Length: 462
Ligand code: PEP
Ligand code: CO
Image 1 (cartoon, rainbow, N blue to C red):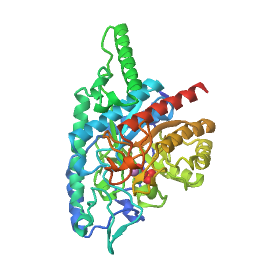
Image 2: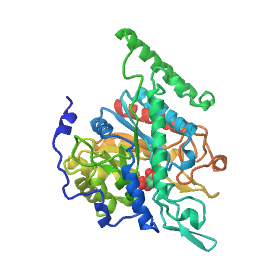
Image 3: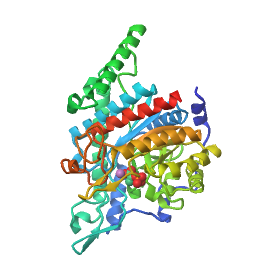
């Protein structure tokens, strides 16, 4: 048994002063105001009775894999849309996103020689934090759009009024997404013998095609070689684990999915395997931290450039008091211009205190900017630079970068600038689809996986 799984068996103290609705006594940031409290309570009751989307044993398996990543035995790939929306719950969009994540993980496995933990930002990524509570257009002020689980983007009072029934629809859409992903994977879609299944139409004409095809055939050869040696099919190559995550922002929804299960102590959020706290809701005394401290899932916290070493250590004390392996991931999102200045003190503090965390780099959210033609975008060069600096800063601090967190899609969108096709400001007009943050398109996503591999290899040689 590995040292980390032994530690997993140690008793972890139950927070006996915790209840799924205890967050209500704290200040809750970023929550909508529902006009009809009784309708909200009815929806929560309905949600409590619906079947869960994931199980506690899947959650515990993921926690173990994240514990392995903390020890450098795995690398985490977490990616998906900034926000899912109800209209995009279609077979093409779901399978293309799964394909690009599988392709990226293939590149990472092949290049890093490490098993990859695959976590989608989907099947529940429906709630968004916003910088302002309201939006004004031509003298009319309405509540801001907070994601499809809360309201709709159209600028009318009806669309923007928070509607609790949307939670039922979000649960159903999440279940459909999960069901399709599980069926694809169980049906052999993720079979490493057949990475050609994941070909997206573009691969043939992409500047990256050759490098990718080389890896695919290299991997196919390696699989066949191993099977020749073993004289049998190598098991576990015909299926992969896939886990889900979302920002657990809308606490009435999350609370209603928080349950106790037979033969396990404590409470699990059964709407996703790996919920995270966004940067705007990570206040130590806030409702979100209060909710998260009591669930047994592995959890993530976004860490931004204003976070201080003291704040971070106190947050770690509250969220992982027993230093449980795999429990806590810190997702830093500083921005290419700030990471060099802001990250090292945090890495030093956590290492000095001997706290066990998984460090993940989100190179997206610190690099958002607006163009003169009014698009919210990100430059591929800044994303690349933040990832490269993250590897270097961790190496210098004696800590380990254990994963990346990306906003991406399997579609041919033009939302981020740069990359192998050098997309420009004018290209953004062609296929900008996101209602919220700009995502890497399939090609930029694959290029990101390739640059991670290159940077990781440099570290290994250094
Ligand atoms: C996000 O991940 O979409 C997000 C809003 O991130 P952050 O909390 O880091 O700003
Ligand atoms: Co985002």
